[in-house]
Image 1: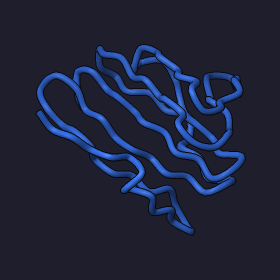
Image 2: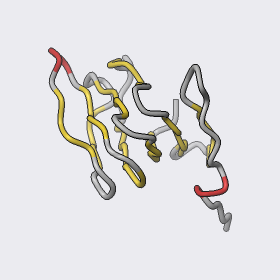
Image 3: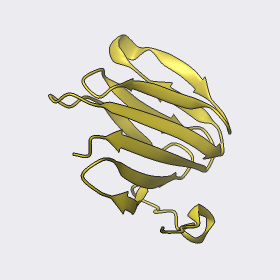
Length: 105
């Protein structure tokens, strides 16, 4: 077993979002992203099979998709998609999210 506390990784970058590796194994990868208001992870995709989830646990913003699609994102919201599907996130306030990728890349 391994225990982590997302609140301990509470650093925000002024020029770019902060990313912290929480877990990495052959089965899945878990990352904690901290965004200041206005920062974003631009829409992107990966040319592999797998899935990605983005869970908002603090702050508000938007999930980003193909063709400028946006979906509101608030604490408790989770986006799940194929990793080949374009995805991203934009923070409207300081925001923390947990990203899980399976299998890991």
